[in-house]
Image (tube, rainbow, N blue to C red; front, side):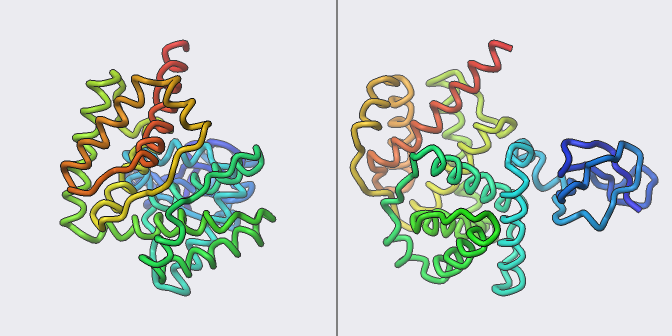
Length: 287
């Protein structure tokens, strides 16, 4: 019997997974109504539990904060995608990757609702480079459409493919070492250039670190974004010269580290994340 230790909302609760002696592991349970009409100290209704996340897997990475912000219906759809990967393809997504995928899907749906979808200029290159993962991503889009009634554009299959490829980083010690070194260097660049600490403890910093993982994954395979910036992004650069200088600094570091050019489009993606980091820091300072 698992006892609720904290209720985050109607669909997410915290329990201790153990024998009740206080030494168990913190587990986040997600399910429709799992936190509704109950309270701390009561047994969880196991029939409502749809997904479990061990806090040791999502807590330190900052993914837990993201988990609480993703709409439940998107979490549920992502969980079904995760089940598909496990049962059909034998792929087990790490908790942090699953939460990252859910967060990406939630943002994609929000952008489409707002009329500003993000185009994937690497779509066909991604399809050719990772054909197996791309086929799985198409299957995932079908599940999302059936579950949410939202037909995401084909561009999203490319982004989902990169999430699947990113999961493969975890099983490669050499790449994991490269990733860790790169992230530490980029965190230092952002701290020195902008005075912003990126530790994964906030939503914006967790998303930024996830993006850096994707950049490293592309560069270690000599794959980079290609494409031209439109007027909107040109305006962003003009309005945020210090942040774009930092993005260019990061791009220069990656150029030297991987001997693979970081394009202007990739720097723009970095700029978008840096803008979010800055705005988050400003909001925290005003509280």
